[in-house]
Image (tube, rainbow, N blue to C red; front, side, top):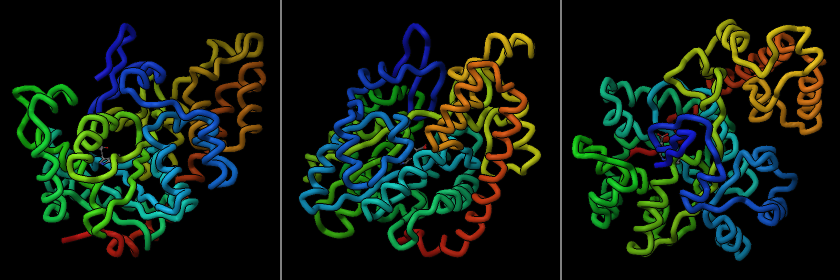
Amino acid sequence: MVANEQEFVVTPWEVRGEIDYNKLIKEFGTELITNELLKRIEKHTGELHYLLRRKIFFSHRDLDWILDKYESGEKFFLYTGRGPSGHTHLGHLIPWIFTQHLQEKFDVELYFQMTDDEKFLHNPDMKLEESLKYTYENALDVLACGLSPSKTFIFSNIEFAKTLYRISLEIAKHVTFSTVKAVFGFENNTNIGMIFFPSMQAAPCFLPCILKGKNIPCLIPAAIDQDPYWRGIARFVAPKLGYYKPAQIHSKFLPGLGKGGKMSASEPETAIFTTDPPEVVERKIMNAFTGGRATIEEQRSKGGDPDICPIYQYYYFLFEPDDKKLMDIYMACKSGQLLCGEDKARLAIRVKEFLIEHQRKRKAAEKILDKVMLRD
Ligand code: TRP
């Protein structure tokens, strides 16, 4: 729970306001990814992924320890997940794109949890069948990011409950109500499913250890809002169960197309969904807030403000991985050469191209979906 004078809030269920990521690091007690650590990663991956170079993945816990283990011949596994409450938007893809990169470069397995139980319990209008439906729908987006079908295991909490429940029980026994109240802000009117749920999200940190009968280091790439699960539950319980504490690498949030705030499915006009048709993408981008001036004359003479502009942020987070080209856009905007209309039109073309390709891969993923789903 973080709220300050500027009123930003980052919890697993709510992300709001202008986020001060440095403050978040202090409050959560995580560590900044230093340049030394980046150099160490680069030794294994070759040229650094733009998400690391640009510090979009910016914070961690025990990443240096994961590399120690890896360098001494002990491979880790990756764990990440999705709460299937609706269609996937572009912001969701960022941790998955990075997870795919890590999987490829380190040649490791990925365990991917779909918390359809959580979305059912948390959203008053959500039906069980509906969140389960989104598990399968969203899994196509996950696979479309290029994950290895032979090294990726996706599971629905509802459907894989038999295996997960035993692990969750072991975890839950060590976690009191007062702990989850403090960590997640649960109150007396929180339903009891939600109170148990954190042990379901912590369970995959140890799942491969149980499946394979040995202790295996775990690395979780995820947006920073998920940190309370690891800090408050998984890392606390791990030593009590005889496992390594899971390590984390945390990302920032893709902003929405409106003024300030992260991309959120609850504001559909400022979020681009992977299933949006081209004309919808076009409309949303053309209607976006920008860092532009009131008139063309003013823009030409004073320049725009890319730092507050979601259009620029889209290039930064997803659509212009080339640093030099990104800088060109930045300078052209700041100098008044580039007008918002043109900037938006160019981005719309990029996003539409990206989505055509993504939708093609999504379709192709239908064939492998069954193979990667864990069931019990
Ligand atoms: N609770 C997450 C959400 O609502 C989904 C999730 C489960 C997850 N396990 C995870 C996210 C591990 C990141 C890492 O989106």
